[in-house]
Image (cartoon, rainbow, N blue to C red; front, side, top):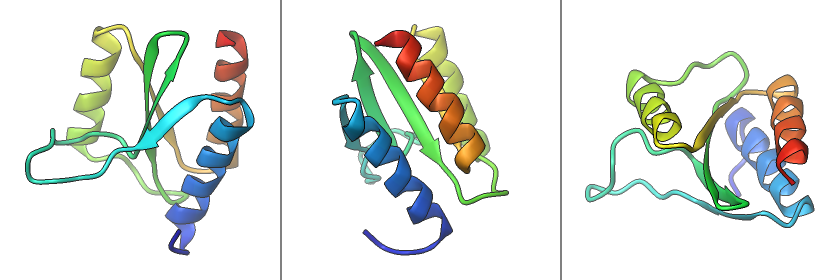
Length: 98
């Protein structure tokens, strides 16, 4: 995995999901994909979770936020993880679901 602030957060997200044995995968961008798809997708107890990862202090784009809203309207969950505080919140949410 590449280095840099965002990639360090991505690594922590992956390690968290792995620690709980959660089925997850990175969403690769492509010209045939859907705009705004989060960096990582996971399934917990049949529920789709989108996880957008940003470097600390960075914000999600309008397309990413709109994707998150659509996912939530469809019954899924969407998280923006930009550092340790948001990662701790994700961990609490996952523990509540498991």
